[in-house]
Length: 297
Ligand SMILES: [Cu+2]
View 1 (spheres, rainbow, N blue to C red):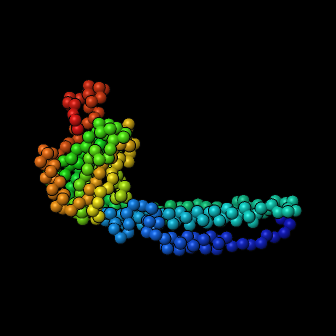
View 2 (cartoon, rainbow, N blue to C red):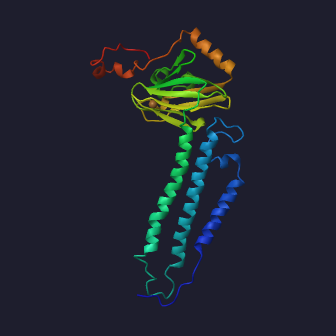
View 3 (cartoon, rainbow, N blue to C red):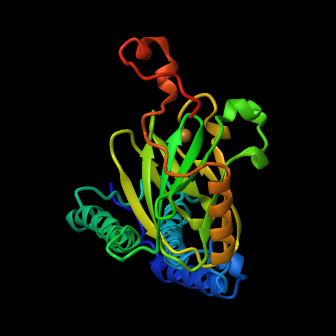
């Protein structure tokens, strides 16, 4: 069937492009908080040397998604409005099928969009995971059900966290949790290990996390640039007390950092903790196949 009368032509692309421009302009006039996509930190006091790059990737991804969304919603609304059934319409509107140029576009455009996202993500992740620089300090973080141990490898001191269930379980106070100290403006190389199951080392304010996998050591480097107290947590569901697997991070001056290391040594926490102390060693089925003694760690 064919339409009895020709349809008026519209320019939806112009409309959506205009809308997209309005969003971009509106965003540029927004507060720092909005411009950062509600991520923690502020643009004039970045928390690490990496946060500006991560914020930029996050913001760019959202703007790209919004533009694609506006064009898609615009086309949907345009079709609904222009091709609606009108009074006295007793025929079907023009039917479109086997339209090769359109179908080619359906394939090419998504590939192009994924390609753009891939390019920027790959560029930034490569930079974030670069560990070729010489780090100022080296910290080994060990995840365990359900707490953390930190070995300050250069200073020969360690901090050990109590299992979450022993400090009040799911209501355990954060103040009771272990605290990781880092000197400000010094490049730290983290070595991440796990004693039992997969955990994930996450300091939300640093906008970065990395998995801790049994039998595989992951590393990354970061330079904290803003003194302060931050929260850390496990970002990989790891069992009953996963939600209590928390820690504090204190980014302090070099003097305070050295004083803290001395404190640890005075408490007898010299050397470093190994991976051999596992909670799983207490489990009957496991302990029958090992000679490892039960441990507090
Ligand atoms: Cu965990």
